[in-house]
Image (cartoon, rainbow, N blue to C red; front, side, top):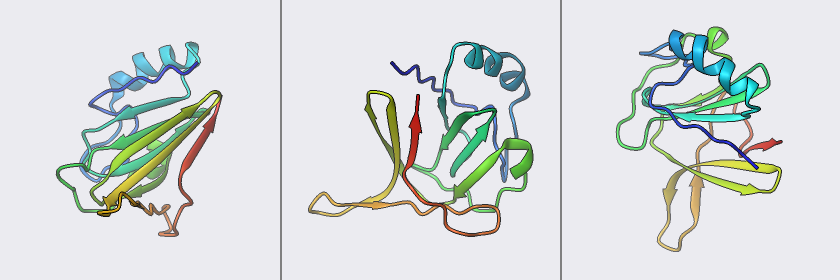
Length: 134
């Protein structure tokens, strides 16, 4: 069974406009860790980001309507492993102990998805989808 919290402000964020949300990092993240939460979804920063901090994954999906251009600068502080400044939405599949996250940028008339191709700090493409195991 998965417990999946959602927030507007992300605890961990590399920018370019917003950084980590200190009160969430200090108060909410410890609660999530004690509760065995493996993944959390947020918005606020208008791009896609995937951070991994202390074995948990934090996904920012804030670019469904407006995209904020500009490269994040706070990679290390936020634990960010990938990002992309492109409009998208998420499709999340849960099958038992496996959770799969797809970031979709377009849907063709036949229903075929085009997937986001995020990059790491060096600008190299990061394989998708994100697959988590409990």
